Image (cartoon, rainbow, N blue to C red; front, top):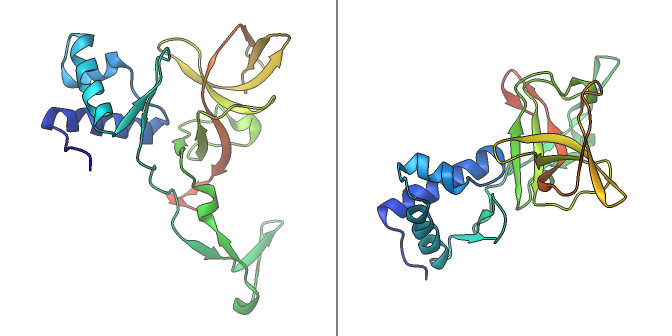
Amino acid sequence: MNRPLTKQQQVVYDFIRERIIARGYGPTVREIGEHMNIKSPNGVMCHLKAIERKGMIVRTANKSRAIELTEPISRLFGASLTVSGNVHDSVYFPVPAEQGKTVDLSIMARDGRCLLKVLDDSLQEVHICSGDYLIMQLRETPASGQLVMVQISETENALRYWFPEHGRTRLQPVNRLQPALLVDQAEVLGVVVGVVRSVDNLLF
């Protein structure tokens, strides 16, 4: 059985967990230091090493955002729903209860996935609207043409289409008017695997 965390270690762990759930990847040492008001990176590292020894997190060397939880991320959906009707040309056609199929929404929620909320219409070209939620598979190896969350710089992460080309990678913005970025290497934080639309703040 793992030893309990100290009060400060618990605060660090809760912050790591909150960041991973909220945006899909862990905080940097600098972000943890700012949150905890710890000025020395070594002070933050002492907490991280202690939490790792207690089996609560794992860290990967040589990656700027390499902190991951050992516990499974909570499921996005925990139930199935019955299809009660169909919509065609904006017209609703009810389905008799005995004919309604059951859809298991938990298939969308696997370990290592998180939700990202879209706050504007910058992804409208690919029919993703403000208020939608992106389902992101963390630390996934992308295939060519997939939409990924990629680390552009130490302080910037962005959604880009992933296109390997002759030993380099072209990061293509969703907005076709924006220029593509050709890089030798880039850290993929996750791959977008689905979209959940929100209507009146209700997920469906």
